[in-house]
Image 1 (tube, rainbow, N blue to C red):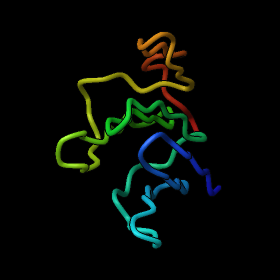
Image 2: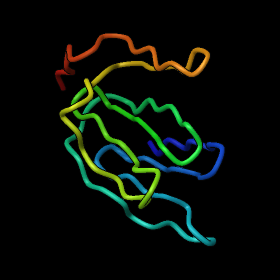
Image 3: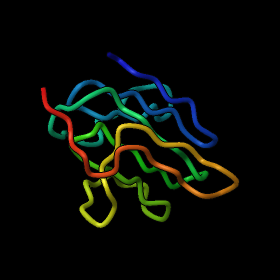
Length: 96
């Protein structure tokens, strides 16, 4: 840690339990979550899905807020394949 994700419309920096976004030249804390494995994330311009194996987090494209979600699975890896998210180890979890 930290992990830095340079996406299409934003830069996200992740610690073990905190998610930050680079906004107008400074880091802004967006969310605190349960610790897990290293983060993986995929972006679709203003929408982001990310997981650390313990929690799944989305960044809402409309209001740019971050939130944990149980509507989407957690995962250990993810990629964007032609506009479709493919995840590995869905809802398997991660033991510290």
